[in-house]
Image (cartoon, rainbow, N blue to C red; front, side):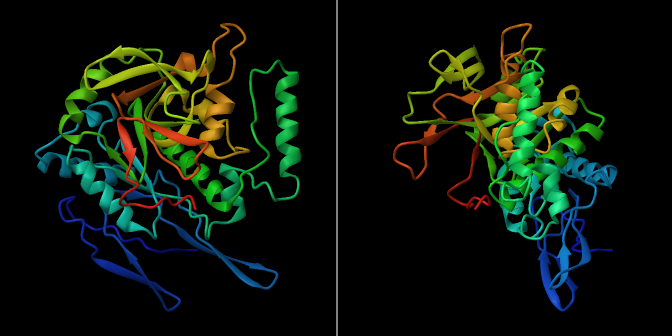
Length: 362
């Protein structure tokens, strides 16, 4: 077992230069020299029918956390700006999930985040093009695999027989890419669990700030009003609706540029909504989030239906109403999508940089 693409270098966020290459088996790989990364892939080989299958399962993300934090702290000290988000999550507390073979995405988004004083810790994403089935199945089971639909349905029936306190939505992920995204978030949560700080931010690598010039001050004001019961604070999310006015977002607190909401849905029905572009998670809820894996649908579906939309028997509220708070910039909802009937409405104080970066979900 040999480590590949271990291209950690001492560069500042201002340069983000691509400094080196790593070779294996005659193939040359470009890799960004970043001192802020963990979970690099481990090249593994195993014999299978028809030849040798080579997987790129990630190394434990917890390796080298102190070194990552040291370099991020050095960069923050030399920076003119220090984001109010780092005041919440600490040094190394903004974990960005990013494919090892796509350094340009991390570089692009890092430059955008640097404008508001955020230095991300790059967590190498599980790669659906080469990760082993065993690795991918830790995040989500593949629907086309024999036994997956039956297992998922059996779990749902079991939970219903126990009173419906838990749920298992879906009959499996639709692709290896969906599996990989779910496993990447699972690994990011494991990393967050091992940190010393109470809060950790988890970003996907196309998440950039809304209104960057006013972002830090607005976030600081908003965070001061986050209720103590909140355990997951979304900075970006989406609602699937036929038109922009169909979804209901109730304002809990208005702090000027940003607002806090603890209730989203349609009519009188609470629905947490999906998308996992950016969120902040408290250590106390991480065991409950990790218990959702392996998922039986995409990770945002899994979070929404298996946790947030779940009805709590004693209180009569959903779990989301108890532990989930979302931060939104006024007027941030954008009606996007190719389907003219059902379109996701994106909301939050972070947004997907769709103009510069294509989705890696397809």
